[in-house]
Amino acid sequence: MEFAEMPVTQAKEAFRKTAETFKAGAKTLPQRYFVSSEIFAQEQKKIFSRQWVLVGHQSQIPKAGDYFTSEIAGESLIIVRDKRGAIHGFYNVCRHRGSRLIENRNGQSAAIQCADYSLHAIELALWEGFIFVNLADASTQLGGHISLDEWFVPLAGKFSRWNLSALRSAKRIDYDVRANWKLIFENYSECYHCLGVHPELSKISPSDSAENDLTEGPFLGGFMRIAKGKSLTMTGNACALPIGSFGERDFHLVFYYSIFPNMLLSLHPDYVMVHQLRPQSAERTLIFCDWLFNPEAFNRSDFEPDDAVEFWDMVNKEDWHVCELSQQGIASHAYEPGPYSARESIPAAWDEYYLQQMR
Ligand SMILES: [Fe+2]
Image (cartoon, rainbow, N blue to C red; front, top):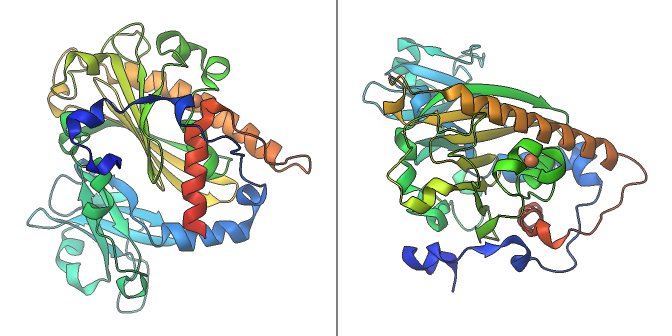
């Protein structure tokens, strides 16, 4: 039975240890996938110009006229909230003489709000408060255009207890990583590297505690256990009000899901971390990392967002460093695809889905 067909109560029990879903014989991708500008261009066309891509969260533009700009597949986009509260996306190109309209990364403008329909609109939709755009021209899509709701059917209801749409970011850090975007996904998808690379993380969340319920397709992941303390923070304490109304079990787990092609969603009991990837070239990726909290946590004296931010900023940098080392090694003449271990079933599944999209 497919996951999507399972009733939620049954799906909850469908978690399996990482090695149990390993398909023997899986190997890492050939070198060209990490260094070739032709393959990078194909990815921009076949993946980032055609699929639903994360650009932000609705809490970034709370008021009418609030906007931010976003670069996807070489296009500059304006994401803006209108007078009625709806969010729209437009190409950042003036209809009169083609000029870039907005240079800022974000701001407030009554003018764009009124200019709505003289700009070229892009397809935009929200999932759990996260804003996604799709640059595909519906007329050129084989087999018709998949809506965001259809796309997220396998995750329907899965994250409702985290109240994702209501959350607010307390902090964003931008990282400029000298590594191919796929290395970031592959790294995120396994904790085989955690003992050596993340001593602090491994102490509180055992590197072999992963169990996954999504093991193939565009959405992959599961949970790891919090063995010591209340959350993944520098102090080990919870740093904010709980994110949602959890059962006892959820207070001891952190859920990690990768959402193809540019979102990493890490759900802790007291905060949600979201990585948004922006591939810049075959060898460089910008990563926007947000720490989102229960909106009611912000005005309380026990709100300590930096406790979480510092922890993951440390772990993030450890990860980006090993991704950069991988990039350097893969660029060598000596590199050839190597066998994935059974502990790397999820990166192997990610590669498999990626290759399907590139065919
Ligand atoms: Fe890591």
